[in-house]
Amino acid sequence: MSQPIILLMRTISDDYLQTLKKAAQGYQLVTAEESATINLDDVEIIISWRDDLGNKILASPTSQLKWVQVYSAGVDDLPLDKLKEKKILLSNASGVHGIPISETVIGMLLSHYRGLHLASINQLDNKWDNRIKVTELNGQSLLIVGTGAIGRQLAKVATVLGVNVYGLNRSGYPLDDFIETYPQADIDRVLPEMDIVINILPLTSETHYFYDTDRFQLMKDGVVFINVGRGPSVNTASLIEACQSGKVGFAGIDVFEEEPLPVDNPLWQMENVLITPHISGKTTQYNARFFDILMDNLQEYLKRGQLVRNQVQIDQGY
Image 1 (cartoon, rainbow, N blue to C red):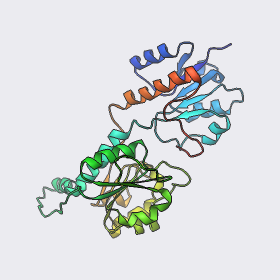
Image 2: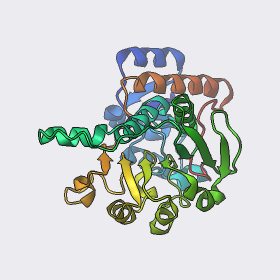
Image 3: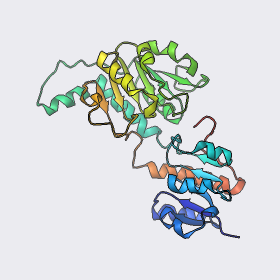
Image 4: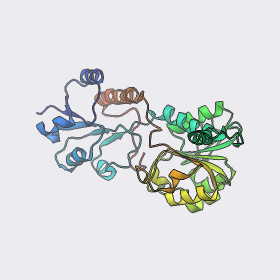
């Protein structure tokens, strides 16, 4: 009988590699670059994901694949139907991003409320303008749409800064650090009451273009809108219109429908828009946090054939 294989589709450091080898005795560790030398049917575990290899493995009727641990939080670009059909376990990197994305959101908000964004623009023109409108983040009403690990971390930080934090999730279940949470079905009723709307939704069939022209029109005039969730949850044309009309007073956008954002997109030239190039989840601590998730899951998988952290509910898409 062939030795089962763990296929690494992402480079990891030698330290992590040695730890993984020690934990997974009895398995052969193979990198994507070495995959041509093995029988792909012997791959039982995939770490990270590459379409070329992953889809080839899934297409084989004799594949022994049982678990895929991806490196990202989002799984919308994976062949979820095929994974479900083959009853393959799937886990993501949820939790890795809580601190960096929360810090990015707070940075975006402070750059607007404390005038830092406009001051930075003026600096490029050697322009001294002390008439910039400056107010406080403290006391603002903030709605976090998507109260997973990132949303909960953001709520904790924002509460310390004196922000009134509300949440929106599938059923409206209550959570610490939120004054109140609402079911997703109440979104249109809640939006007009909020000064700030933060999108952290995963991408599913239900959340594609979740923010369209009608939904932006329901928001408070001059609302602050931040998207650190998924790009296609926001209709870009509707966002442009809302920013141009002043319905959205300030937008901080890290993810877009089309990436990179085309150079001729009007958002680039708007003073009330802060663009970051899909970096809100990046951190020097990423690999260490991901490896903690991987090792916890690996130990549980080897003992019981189950996962203990971040198992994706494939029907829901997250």
